[in-house]
Length: 276
Image 1: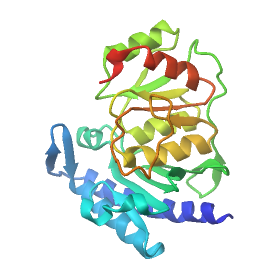
Image 2: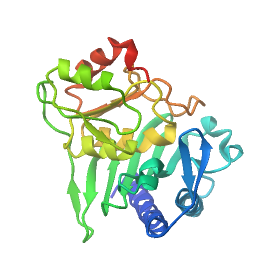
Image 3: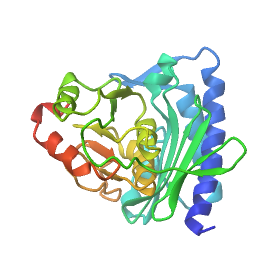
């Protein structure tokens, strides 16, 4: 087992323990607060964040950890670090609040500005995934066996299945996809779970034009999809730079099986009205 894979297995165990915390909160009534407009936070977010940060710090002393629910002062100099963990303790909080099961725990590792490893655990699905760029991507089966996962082989846009946001997408995206003879888009919550749908080949692409959350919404997805043989960039076609110091994914996100990346980029660039 490589050093990177060993790190991924450690992060996976931490994410699975955080998923247990999330599900304990999910199983009972919980309060919902708002950090901003349409930006909910719950005890599940905060308790999972605390567990992940504490465990990553214990396993990797001195680690730089950029976590959504942590005090930004704790990671203010992250761009100077060669290795940075990006943590979304509960990706899809709106779906968590809606109790539709579409939420995930995400831990990604970026090294020298590039996503290299990603873990995504879907608590309500009871499914776990991890990927190491250059080595492969896997689903962890209930008995602990590793099932290799791969993006789809589809090479033409006709009939392609694209995942889009359940809460943020407009009809413009669906119109663009229909004009390319693609299937009706799959509306889904959680950036991470949409990345999983691409990584396992269930969807051929996932697109979010305009602002697409923060770096902790992208890192694990970026690594998992690429480890599974796909491509992940912003919606302008540029790789994500996790060392730039800016945490906002201001230029969108496109994850695909790689074969359709160019045609999807062309379609998004041609429609200014897609910048939500």
